Length: 324
Image (cartoon, rainbow, N blue to C red):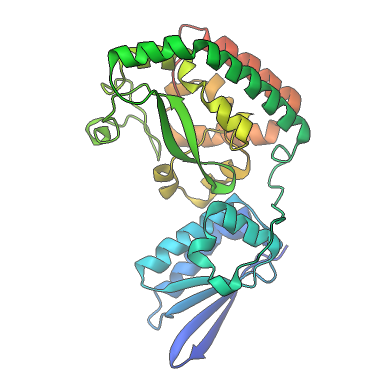
Protein backbone atom coordinates (compact mmCIF):
# COMPACT_ATOMS: atom_id res chain seq x y z
CA UNK A 1 0.00 0.00 0.00
CA UNK A 2 1.40 3.34 -1.03
CA UNK A 3 0.66 5.82 1.74
CA UNK A 4 3.03 8.49 0.44
CA UNK A 5 1.88 11.68 -1.23
CA UNK A 6 4.08 13.10 -3.98
CA UNK A 7 4.25 16.90 -3.89
CA UNK A 8 5.49 18.54 -7.09
CA UNK A 9 5.99 22.25 -7.71
CA UNK A 10 5.30 23.54 -11.21
CA UNK A 11 5.89 27.02 -12.56
CA UNK A 12 3.34 28.58 -14.89
CA UNK A 13 3.52 32.24 -15.85
CA UNK A 14 5.44 33.00 -12.64
CA UNK A 15 2.58 31.54 -10.58
CA UNK A 16 3.22 28.41 -8.61
CA UNK A 17 1.06 25.32 -9.12
CA UNK A 18 1.33 22.44 -6.68
CA UNK A 19 0.58 19.00 -8.06
CA UNK A 20 -0.33 16.36 -5.49
CA UNK A 21 -0.15 12.75 -6.66
CA UNK A 22 -2.61 10.92 -4.45
CA UNK A 23 -1.86 7.39 -3.20
CA UNK A 24 -3.26 4.30 -4.93
CA UNK A 25 -5.61 3.86 -1.94
CA UNK A 26 -7.13 6.95 -0.42
CA UNK A 27 -8.73 5.54 2.71
CA UNK A 28 -8.35 5.83 6.50
CA UNK A 29 -4.55 5.50 6.76
CA UNK A 30 -3.70 7.80 3.86
CA UNK A 31 -6.50 10.29 4.53
CA UNK A 32 -5.63 10.78 8.21
CA UNK A 33 -2.45 12.77 7.53
CA UNK A 34 -3.56 14.37 4.25
CA UNK A 35 -5.21 17.57 5.60
CA UNK A 36 -2.17 18.42 7.75
CA UNK A 37 0.16 18.07 4.74
CA UNK A 38 -2.29 20.03 2.61
CA UNK A 39 -2.36 22.84 5.16
CA UNK A 40 1.44 23.10 5.08
CA UNK A 41 1.24 23.85 1.37
CA UNK A 42 -1.54 26.41 1.91
CA UNK A 43 0.36 28.24 4.67
CA UNK A 44 3.80 28.24 3.00
CA UNK A 45 5.36 31.66 2.47
CA UNK A 46 5.40 31.02 -1.26
CA UNK A 47 1.99 29.35 -1.42
CA UNK A 48 0.62 28.27 -4.81
CA UNK A 49 -2.31 29.93 -6.51
CA UNK A 50 -3.57 26.53 -7.63
CA UNK A 51 -3.38 22.97 -6.27
CA UNK A 52 -4.11 20.01 -8.53
CA UNK A 53 -4.93 16.61 -7.03
CA UNK A 54 -3.65 13.95 -9.43
CA UNK A 55 -5.74 10.78 -9.00
CA UNK A 56 -4.11 8.87 -11.87
CA UNK A 57 -2.73 6.22 -9.47
CA UNK A 58 -5.76 6.06 -7.18
CA UNK A 59 -7.81 2.87 -7.51
CA UNK A 60 -9.80 3.11 -4.29
CA UNK A 61 -11.38 5.90 -2.25
CA UNK A 62 -13.71 5.56 0.73
CA UNK A 63 -15.51 7.88 3.16
CA UNK A 64 -12.26 8.82 4.95
CA UNK A 65 -10.85 9.94 1.61
CA UNK A 66 -13.97 12.00 0.99
CA UNK A 67 -13.54 13.55 4.43
CA UNK A 68 -9.97 14.52 3.60
CA UNK A 69 -11.15 16.13 0.35
CA UNK A 70 -13.85 18.11 2.16
CA UNK A 71 -11.29 19.46 4.64
CA UNK A 72 -8.91 20.28 1.77
CA UNK A 73 -11.63 22.24 -0.01
CA UNK A 74 -12.24 24.30 3.14
CA UNK A 75 -8.51 24.97 3.53
CA UNK A 76 -8.13 25.98 -0.11
CA UNK A 77 -11.06 28.38 0.17
CA UNK A 78 -9.71 29.80 3.43
CA UNK A 79 -6.34 30.62 1.88
CA UNK A 80 -7.66 31.72 -1.50
CA UNK A 81 -6.19 28.81 -3.47
CA UNK A 82 -7.89 27.20 -6.45
CA UNK A 83 -8.30 23.43 -6.02
CA UNK A 84 -8.95 20.98 -8.86
CA UNK A 85 -8.60 17.26 -9.51
CA UNK A 86 -7.16 15.64 -12.60
CA UNK A 87 -6.77 12.20 -14.18
CA UNK A 88 -9.48 10.55 -12.14
CA UNK A 89 -10.27 6.90 -12.72
CA UNK A 90 -13.87 5.91 -13.40
CA UNK A 91 -14.28 4.73 -9.81
CA UNK A 92 -12.88 7.89 -8.22
CA UNK A 93 -15.00 10.06 -10.49
CA UNK A 94 -18.09 8.00 -9.63
CA UNK A 95 -17.56 8.69 -5.92
CA UNK A 96 -16.97 12.40 -6.56
CA UNK A 97 -20.14 12.57 -8.64
CA UNK A 98 -22.22 10.68 -6.06
CA UNK A 99 -21.15 13.06 -3.27
CA UNK A 100 -21.48 16.19 -5.41
CA UNK A 101 -17.77 17.02 -5.12
CA UNK A 102 -17.25 16.79 -8.88
CA UNK A 103 -19.16 20.09 -9.21
CA UNK A 104 -16.49 21.73 -7.04
CA UNK A 105 -13.32 19.91 -8.04
CA UNK A 106 -13.75 18.70 -11.62
CA UNK A 107 -13.55 21.11 -14.53
CA UNK A 108 -15.98 20.49 -17.40
CA UNK A 109 -13.38 19.18 -19.81
CA UNK A 110 -12.33 16.53 -17.29
CA UNK A 111 -15.77 15.04 -16.79
CA UNK A 112 -16.16 11.36 -17.62
CA UNK A 113 -19.29 10.61 -19.58
CA UNK A 114 -20.46 7.20 -18.45
CA UNK A 115 -23.73 5.79 -17.13
CA UNK A 116 -22.06 2.68 -15.70
CA UNK A 117 -19.49 4.03 -13.27
CA UNK A 118 -18.46 1.51 -10.62
CA UNK A 119 -18.46 2.40 -6.94
CA UNK A 120 -16.02 1.09 -4.31
CA UNK A 121 -16.96 -1.76 -1.99
CA UNK A 122 -16.22 0.06 1.26
CA UNK A 123 -18.10 -2.54 3.32
CA UNK A 124 -19.69 -5.89 2.33
CA UNK A 125 -23.11 -4.78 3.59
CA UNK A 126 -23.38 -2.05 0.94
CA UNK A 127 -23.39 -4.42 -2.04
CA UNK A 128 -25.02 -7.41 -0.32
CA UNK A 129 -27.94 -8.58 -2.49
CA UNK A 130 -29.45 -10.49 0.45
CA UNK A 131 -29.42 -7.36 2.64
CA UNK A 132 -31.03 -5.38 -0.17
CA UNK A 133 -33.78 -8.00 -0.54
CA UNK A 134 -34.48 -7.80 3.21
CA UNK A 135 -34.58 -4.00 2.90
CA UNK A 136 -37.06 -4.10 0.03
CA UNK A 137 -39.37 -6.61 1.72
CA UNK A 138 -39.11 -4.82 5.06
CA UNK A 139 -39.76 -1.40 3.54
CA UNK A 140 -42.85 -2.65 1.68
CA UNK A 141 -44.23 -4.09 4.93
CA UNK A 142 -43.31 -0.86 6.72
CA UNK A 143 -45.04 1.30 4.13
CA UNK A 144 -48.14 -0.87 4.41
CA UNK A 145 -48.19 -0.26 8.17
CA UNK A 146 -47.60 3.44 7.49
CA UNK A 147 -50.63 3.57 5.20
CA UNK A 148 -52.82 2.10 7.96
CA UNK A 149 -51.61 4.57 10.60
CA UNK A 150 -51.34 7.57 8.28
CA UNK A 151 -54.84 9.00 8.80
CA UNK A 152 -54.91 8.94 12.64
CA UNK A 153 -51.35 10.30 12.83
CA UNK A 154 -52.18 13.05 10.31
CA UNK A 155 -55.31 14.06 12.21
CA UNK A 156 -53.40 14.19 15.53
CA UNK A 157 -50.59 16.32 14.05
CA UNK A 158 -52.95 18.73 12.28
CA UNK A 159 -55.25 19.19 15.29
CA UNK A 160 -52.37 20.28 17.52
CA UNK A 161 -50.44 22.52 15.13
CA UNK A 162 -50.51 23.87 11.61
CA UNK A 163 -47.83 22.98 9.12
CA UNK A 164 -46.76 20.08 6.92
CA UNK A 165 -47.49 16.50 7.93
CA UNK A 166 -44.07 15.23 6.88
CA UNK A 167 -40.76 16.82 7.81
CA UNK A 168 -37.85 16.43 5.40
CA UNK A 169 -34.21 17.18 6.11
CA UNK A 170 -30.95 16.76 4.24
CA UNK A 171 -28.80 14.01 5.69
CA UNK A 172 -25.60 12.39 4.46
CA UNK A 173 -25.56 8.72 3.58
CA UNK A 174 -23.06 6.25 2.17
CA UNK A 175 -19.71 7.97 1.45
CA UNK A 176 -21.28 11.30 2.39
CA UNK A 177 -23.83 11.39 -0.43
CA UNK A 178 -26.70 13.78 0.40
CA UNK A 179 -30.32 12.63 0.49
CA UNK A 180 -33.65 13.78 1.92
CA UNK A 181 -34.79 11.91 5.00
CA UNK A 182 -38.51 11.84 5.80
CA UNK A 183 -40.26 11.77 9.18
CA UNK A 184 -43.66 12.68 10.53
CA UNK A 185 -43.36 16.21 11.89
CA UNK A 186 -42.89 16.25 15.67
CA UNK A 187 -41.87 19.88 16.19
CA UNK A 188 -43.35 23.32 15.69
CA UNK A 189 -42.88 24.75 12.21
CA UNK A 190 -40.31 27.30 13.45
CA UNK A 191 -38.14 24.63 15.06
CA UNK A 192 -35.04 25.23 12.95
CA UNK A 193 -35.13 28.98 13.58
CA UNK A 194 -35.39 28.39 17.34
CA UNK A 195 -32.63 25.78 17.56
CA UNK A 196 -30.14 28.33 18.92
CA UNK A 197 -32.43 28.86 21.92
CA UNK A 198 -32.08 25.25 23.05
CA UNK A 199 -29.14 24.14 25.17
CA UNK A 200 -27.21 21.29 23.58
CA UNK A 201 -26.56 18.62 26.21
CA UNK A 202 -24.41 16.45 23.94
CA UNK A 203 -20.64 16.32 23.64
CA UNK A 204 -19.39 16.62 20.08
CA UNK A 205 -21.02 17.43 16.72
CA UNK A 206 -24.51 16.15 17.60
CA UNK A 207 -27.53 17.87 19.11
CA UNK A 208 -29.38 16.41 22.11
CA UNK A 209 -31.77 18.02 24.58
CA UNK A 210 -33.75 16.20 27.26
CA UNK A 211 -36.24 19.08 27.36
CA UNK A 212 -36.95 20.61 23.97
CA UNK A 213 -39.99 22.96 24.01
CA UNK A 214 -40.14 22.83 20.21
CA UNK A 215 -41.49 19.28 20.34
CA UNK A 216 -45.29 19.10 20.33
CA UNK A 217 -47.32 16.84 22.62
CA UNK A 218 -48.17 14.57 19.71
CA UNK A 219 -44.51 14.75 18.71
CA UNK A 220 -43.43 13.40 22.10
CA UNK A 221 -45.70 10.39 21.61
CA UNK A 222 -44.54 9.79 18.05
CA UNK A 223 -40.89 9.94 19.09
CA UNK A 224 -41.37 7.72 22.14
CA UNK A 225 -43.02 5.05 19.99
CA UNK A 226 -40.76 5.72 16.94
CA UNK A 227 -43.88 6.23 14.80
CA UNK A 228 -42.33 9.44 13.50
CA UNK A 229 -39.80 7.35 11.62
CA UNK A 230 -42.34 5.38 9.56
CA UNK A 231 -41.85 7.55 6.41
CA UNK A 232 -38.20 6.46 6.38
CA UNK A 233 -39.34 3.15 4.92
CA UNK A 234 -39.63 5.13 1.69
CA UNK A 235 -35.93 6.05 2.03
CA UNK A 236 -35.15 2.35 2.45
CA UNK A 237 -37.18 1.38 -0.61
CA UNK A 238 -35.39 4.07 -2.64
CA UNK A 239 -32.02 2.73 -1.50
CA UNK A 240 -30.64 5.80 0.27
CA UNK A 241 -31.07 4.02 3.62
CA UNK A 242 -31.19 0.47 4.97
CA UNK A 243 -33.36 -1.06 7.67
CA UNK A 244 -30.20 -1.47 9.77
CA UNK A 245 -27.13 0.74 9.61
CA UNK A 246 -25.57 3.79 11.20
CA UNK A 247 -27.23 7.02 12.28
CA UNK A 248 -27.43 9.43 9.29
CA UNK A 249 -25.66 12.72 10.16
CA UNK A 250 -26.67 16.22 9.12
CA UNK A 251 -24.35 18.44 7.01
CA UNK A 252 -23.77 20.60 10.12
CA UNK A 253 -22.45 17.58 12.01
CA UNK A 254 -20.14 16.59 9.15
CA UNK A 255 -18.62 20.07 9.21
CA UNK A 256 -17.12 19.22 12.62
CA UNK A 257 -15.91 15.70 11.81
CA UNK A 258 -12.31 14.63 12.11
CA UNK A 259 -11.08 12.19 9.46
CA UNK A 260 -11.57 9.02 11.60
CA UNK A 261 -15.22 9.98 12.15
CA UNK A 262 -15.90 9.67 8.43
CA UNK A 263 -15.43 5.88 8.63
CA UNK A 264 -18.98 5.59 9.95
CA UNK A 265 -20.13 6.53 6.42
CA UNK A 266 -18.61 3.40 4.89
CA UNK A 267 -22.06 1.78 5.27
CA UNK A 268 -25.56 2.96 4.46
CA UNK A 269 -27.44 4.73 7.26
CA UNK A 270 -30.26 2.78 8.85
CA UNK A 271 -33.65 3.30 10.45
CA UNK A 272 -32.22 1.33 13.36
CA UNK A 273 -28.78 0.22 14.48
CA UNK A 274 -26.49 -0.20 17.45
CA UNK A 275 -27.33 3.27 18.81
CA UNK A 276 -31.06 2.46 18.67
CA UNK A 277 -30.81 -0.58 20.93
CA UNK A 278 -28.11 0.77 23.23
CA UNK A 279 -29.55 3.92 24.72
CA UNK A 280 -30.88 6.04 21.86
CA UNK A 281 -31.26 9.60 23.20
CA UNK A 282 -29.47 8.69 26.42
CA UNK A 283 -26.22 8.57 24.44
CA UNK A 284 -24.92 12.12 24.51
CA UNK A 285 -21.23 11.55 23.80
CA UNK A 286 -20.44 11.67 20.09
CA UNK A 287 -17.42 9.38 20.46
CA UNK A 288 -19.72 6.72 21.95
CA UNK A 289 -21.93 6.93 18.86
CA UNK A 290 -18.87 6.58 16.62
CA UNK A 291 -17.78 3.50 18.54
CA UNK A 292 -21.22 1.92 18.22
CA UNK A 293 -21.26 2.59 14.47
CA UNK A 294 -17.80 1.08 13.99
CA UNK A 295 -18.78 -1.90 16.16
CA UNK A 296 -21.72 -2.50 13.81
CA UNK A 297 -19.40 -2.52 10.80
CA UNK A 298 -17.10 -5.05 12.46
CA UNK A 299 -19.91 -7.35 13.62
CA UNK A 300 -22.11 -7.12 10.54
CA UNK A 301 -23.76 -10.12 8.95
CA UNK A 302 -27.37 -10.79 7.93
CA UNK A 303 -28.17 -12.62 11.16
CA UNK A 304 -26.82 -9.70 13.17
CA UNK A 305 -29.11 -7.32 11.23
CA UNK A 306 -32.10 -9.49 12.08
CA UNK A 307 -31.10 -9.54 15.77
CA UNK A 308 -30.89 -5.74 15.82
CA UNK A 309 -34.33 -5.46 14.18
CA UNK A 310 -35.86 -7.73 16.85
CA UNK A 311 -34.08 -5.83 19.64
CA UNK A 312 -35.41 -2.56 18.19
CA UNK A 313 -38.99 -3.81 18.46
CA UNK A 314 -38.37 -4.64 22.13
CA UNK A 315 -36.83 -1.21 22.78
CA UNK A 316 -39.74 0.61 21.10
CA UNK A 317 -42.26 -1.05 23.39
CA UNK A 318 -40.22 -0.52 26.54
CA UNK A 319 -41.10 2.39 28.82
CA UNK A 320 -37.58 3.83 28.54
CA UNK A 321 -37.70 4.15 24.78
CA UNK A 322 -36.75 7.53 23.35
CA UNK A 323 -36.19 9.26 20.05
CA UNK A 324 -32.83 9.34 18.32
